[in-house]
Image (cartoon, rainbow, N blue to C red):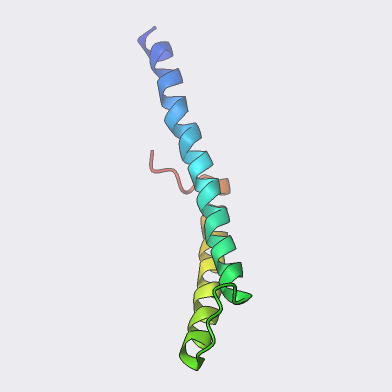
Length: 77
């Protein structure tokens, strides 16, 4: 019976972890898209290649994090 009492307590952090993971996926992909469309108005030559690299890396990391999230690899439990 003690096990039944602990299951609802474990479900709340798990649900919060999933919601937080989905929010972070949206943030990473969104930041990458914003960098690629030059939302922050970076015009110098150095910042141009940096925003392309940063945008691509943010999007790739967001996709990787999404894959880990939906396949269940992201769970440390």
